[in-house]
Image (cartoon, rainbow, N blue to C red; front, top):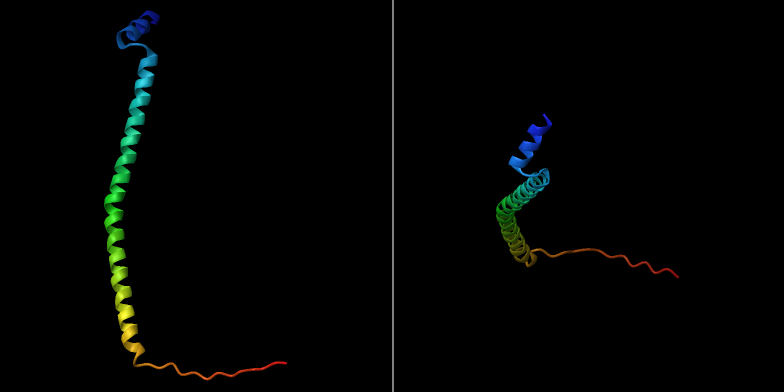
Length: 86
């Protein structure tokens, strides 16, 4: 049994080589996964943020235009009481 494992180790290479190769493969696949997630988030969130920003800009512009046209029509009328304490 011992000679069979030694022969297999000689055929496949040392255990140290395969351990570092597996670590490198896991590291590369994790890096690729992180890059894919970041790229997908960029493709989804960037257009969404642009659309929301454009919508907010148009909404604020419309509200300001409406407020500007109503400001000449409406007059704020108020009563004030001055209390003088001595």
